[in-house]
Length: 230
Image (cartoon, rainbow, N blue to C red; front, side, top):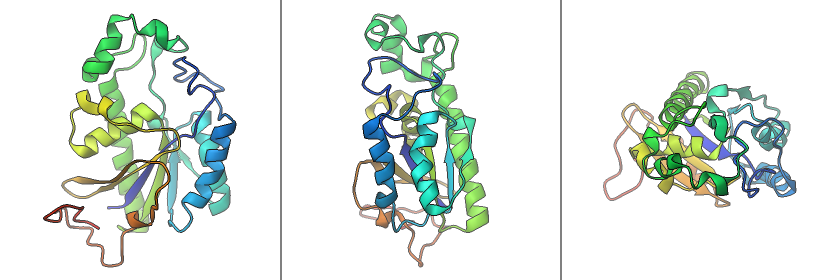
């Protein structure tokens, strides 16, 4: 199967604001985020990217814009990779949410958390994982098992996908950190995914490109550590 680079959008005007922006329209990249988006072009230089898929939220579309222009690519917009629908929690100050009984559930038992008038985190994981796997199969069919593609989404969404790839219950997904503009890399096989990177903020990504001797049918891990597919 192909290799997916999971990119969290660059820093936005909502990050650090103390407000749960969620799906509020018009949340854009801040000045630092714009610089991060431009820097992504050089960071991914040398990585062949066959396809790009992104959340419809402005901050994701703006994050990938410089990369698309540089590569001459057109992104597929997928609402299944959109931000969590926080319902009536949207645009509320986080300091006020700390006193809500649901806050403890979100932190300690997220698989049971359903946001009022919004969606549950278990449903978020289900839609996001299904979307990533479907796009991965599509890219593999079109470009072959050594293909590399990029999906730009949101922190909790990517954390949920990584939890699934790691075989971690959703109740453990709050232990995963996904910073703005960070990349995480997953390679799916017939029987298991391999997580090649997590919350990478600037390292050399050349190692995620499958070598010519790549054996896409192998789902075995290398004895002694490492991913069996690379």
